[in-house]
Length: 160
Image 1 (tube, rainbow, N blue to C red):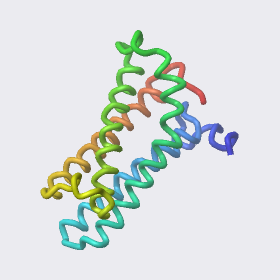
Image 2 (cartoon, rainbow, N blue to C red):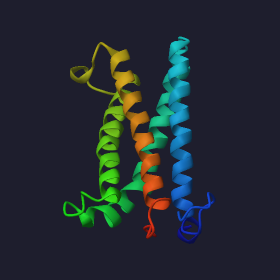
Image 3 (cartoon, helix red, strand yellow):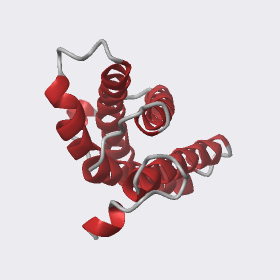
């Protein structure tokens, strides 16, 4: 499996298959989140809940599987000294916003499925869902920027 993920990617950039696969999956997950929003607007709340839950779980899997190790291996060793460089700055910004999107989004997902204690429940659910969706979309846009910074605008891209 490791050899498969590290073969050349399919977009023709300097990225490997894993990076191209991650980019496609994260865009598909963003689309899935958007479908969930549309379902909520149409008042199809049960289907909305299932779609958003699946999207949040897929997002968490992708982050844990495909993003944390490259950050640890390629970005973290250069911090804080190289934070002024585009490669590090863009990736740290993406990781920072992504951390909040992931944790807040998973909290909202757990709340939507009735899996949080009463003390942590909130009443204005629509506001929390909108914030989570906005954070996920911002993180996706930043992730696309990271992809271009790492594999299109970088003469020496990281290889994992």
